[in-house]
Length: 322
Image (cartoon, rainbow, N blue to C red):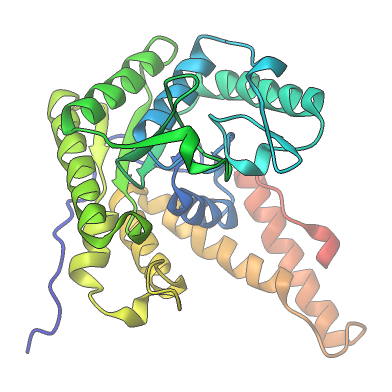
């Protein structure tokens, strides 16, 4: 008896991810979920330097600003609710001191520019095609920062606009890194504040634009079906958090396993198993830290850590917990 539909995902044969890869993740909060998994398994990865970015225009602005080596000025910040905000970054980078904010933002741009030149994989997760345009500047913003709605108009990006935006991202990156491979995915998180029908329209526009992009950039751009895995394989609310909108830990782990099986080398998967064991060992809380049994456990654990670090010197573990 067949009780589940399955998404057919072909194993990649080129541009696979391994422990020599340098990975940059951009986009919705789902990017952070995958980034957390990569960090747990000690891959070389950076996640959302400008915080969570939900839509294509926000990612385009971040990439083009980075590659143009633009400097953000204090005059570009907006004051609201006793804090200064940059409309093209997440609220996590807002604050009360304009100098500190602009310095932090510009440092992140500089570091990202340096990273982009040597990055092997960029994973971009798009969350929505709905955007807000700031009336004063006539610019589409990354985040409204709870500024009153009257200061913005809401728009649905067309498939063509999304395609052009993402193509600009690819073209900009290629000016400093011709070898990077870009993996697009669409977040399974439902943006129901826009409305259920509107959320479906939004996801459809994103998916259509990405597939058009992969057809015109076949060797350097790919699509991973995170959205489809949740919609068609995990069609049950037991795979969602209590809000019934965000995938829960079980769903995220399921998608992660599919992603690893599709994009990672076999040798990396073997190392990941060892690192998983080390991570669990580090987080283990003994009943008696001074017992001979626990000391033997620590000795064995440190030996495994040394072996991994001899193979991959860039990997570090939090030894303070031991």
